[in-house]
Image (cartoon, rainbow, N blue to C red; front, side, top):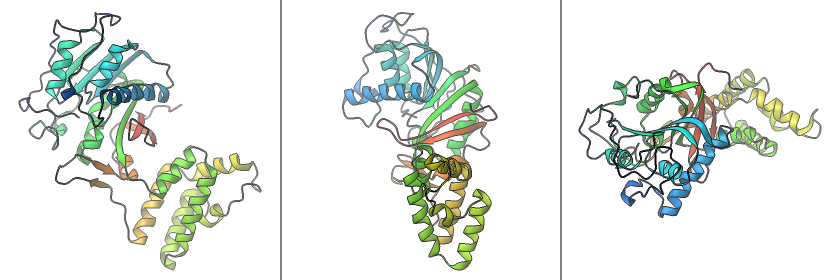
Length: 350
């Protein structure tokens, strides 16, 4: 979440101040724009136009992924909210039933509370500890849920939050958010993920790109043949037990001879090569090659948590036991890194 420089440690109070100099009326349908000072952008974008456009793209991404035309009738909890989504919603009068922004940056929250009086919008400061942004705050592990009076939401979003979380806070953040989702609600959050052959294979399967799938399998089979006999046997056993097929036969699949054509091949592959199976196989494969994948990397040890990266396997693993179920891990887009889509665990995904 965004940086908090001034808030005293261990202050759990929800600030609820609303100034008289707001930019919108109570209906949110008039009153001009929200003018955000440059110091409250908290962004890597160089120009205001780029910063503002990224908000539009994130809004439209959520609508697209959730199958919505807009956010009309939906309630949204934005963790690490910053200011740009508020500006977009207010300036363009985008429909929304409820928007709650939470941030560790007291300056951001103070500004929004003083300049937005629309009843649909509220903003809360929490003093959560983070080595990069707020080292003196309260550990996230001390929270069982957020101080939001039990309010639940249709959508919970976190953009550029998990990109600065250590593994213990990654897991705990998901646990803390779980009580605040409505039945049937959805969670979206961005993060940095290491890309490798397994990542490309999963993406190709998700996009029904059979040529790429077969090319990766062929490359994998060639590398597989170079392993010592005992290692090949272990991988082969693991592959067959998880997929019901062997690497060689999959790699030599002839699309034209296959019953059902390319679509039939993809369906068959998708049954056996689930994301969980691919990640487990890739992990064992790399271990046997003597090059295990690093699950967590802090790219800038001189500035802890400035840029953290997770392996795809570990990013999934940390979701377990949080009350969430991953629906998809998606490739980066122009305004977002890799991002997860999740639903409450145990719910029908349809």
